[in-house]
Image (tube, rainbow, N blue to C red; front, side):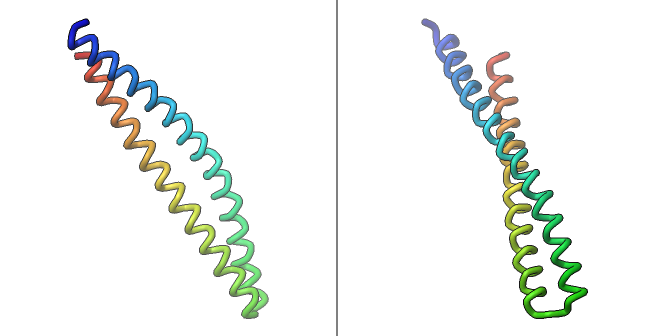
Length: 99
């Protein structure tokens, strides 16, 4: 078996693993996007309650909801960035396979 064939098989194996990883990451992103929408709506609602109620408890609930929103938003952005990196690596592997 030639070196080119071995390299192609190695690249194909990495492409398959990368495709599986991308599917999993995209599933996580879809779920996280749904959570982000829900938690964002909840945080907005608690913000309005805090403004109307003007109590320490309402302000604390709003602060906690806002923190949760930030955590999920950061994770969402991490997934977006990670997917972009994986797609770039997949493109590079496809270029290697084409040469």
